[in-house]
Length: 275
Ligand code: MG
Image 1 (tube, protein in one colour):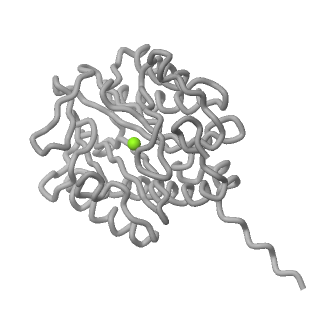
Image 2 (spheres, helix red, strand yellow):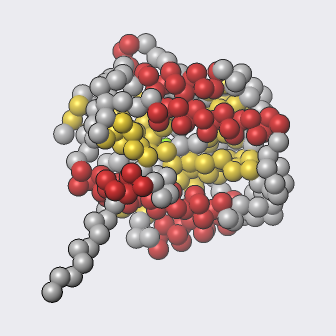
Image 3 (tube, helix red, strand yellow):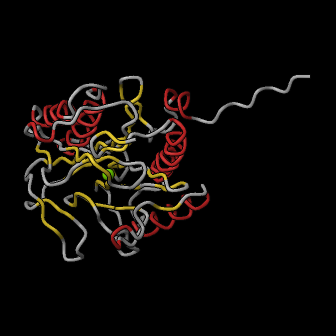
């Protein structure tokens, strides 16, 4: 079914999208155990390709417009679309944004997390950047309501970022997802004029993904033709979840162990054998 040019997912399809989402969410959890000083982004990608294949899925990003890997790995001032490499070694104090997705029987997921590399907790502005970006995603998810304008989500994200003195990266956006990696609508991380104001409906699947920096809101494309970085070299963070509008609100599909999503779209427990 279509709403404008936005595709509404059936419950049956959502069960498959949910499974693709859980593979990507679990992968981010597993990567968290392997991200440490001395690890290369290339070996993380090799782990990811193997993990996705063992789950019976394909990587959503590999081959997408020619992208060569299952993960986008973006370090420090890199915002998104970094290419994993055995030569890129993580150092203590780095932040690493990992963006990934899985495809199961043609159904897509998309999720991202920014990790602090090293012992202990991040400090100062790094800690603040990570918490503000995470909060922006949470506020965006909370703003999802069936019947409400999509702009409410954009406003919630922008407010969470702006009130702490950070900047959203304006040239990069969230999007619909599920039947393809990128579908309508475009989801801006700042309020837009009425023309983009579609109304949310149950069955819409959305990838919300604030990208945030301390300094510049402008982007620079690297020589590899993929990696976007901040123009002034300031750190950037990126968190993303795939959510579905269901029963009027957002249900997060890519969060590992999300109970509500599991109850709605998870495997049906086998009825106990009756004699
Ligand atoms: Mg995305």
